Image (cartoon, rainbow, N blue to C red):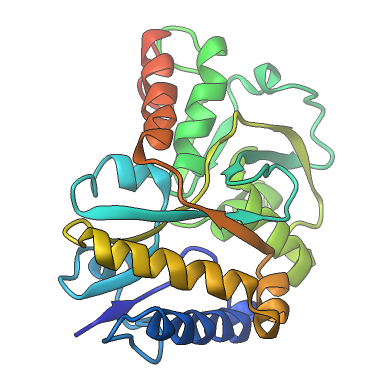
Length: 268
């Protein structure tokens, strides 16, 4: 079975736009000469199952899994760019979010507080925050407790509801949620931004050959240029895509290594 998935920003409010974007991509991939292209997205598969599937054609992942658990499993196609605060070209950062009435004015003032993290294998939710906090950590600790929520939306809910005091949220997710579900960010504010890293990449199987990679990139660029897909791209905040070299994602490993060098290998 040939698999396509776009799980990373697939909010329910944006399903129609995501489906329209995939349908446009599928048309462009077929015009670029790719034979087996699925008509729809495989939402019935979990993200990781799709990424490990032998039939994976096209998906989107996070940079941390790309450089860690899925290194050698996935191959970078291109990195999309988004029109969102905290983004610059193909790079993005994390919005460090607290409640609007929190007295803290800088990250260092959150020592001893409770942190919400979507997933410890997340660049935006964990690695970027760990890197930002490392300079303030004492004997490998900064927070009183770290609560794992499973997703950025749940982290926002945890902070808004007082179960946590801070969370790092993918800049694109924060912008999309603000536009589609403003109640989810009501009562919250951005305390600051993490260091930027390459954004969430479009990927295919690691064993995809040069010809398939070239056709995927050709189709992706054609879809980015297609006027008929402008409404879908606008809804998803997409502005383009760049075929970054795989080495561009080395910065993610470097952020992790810098935190470890400061004696802060784990978000704690």
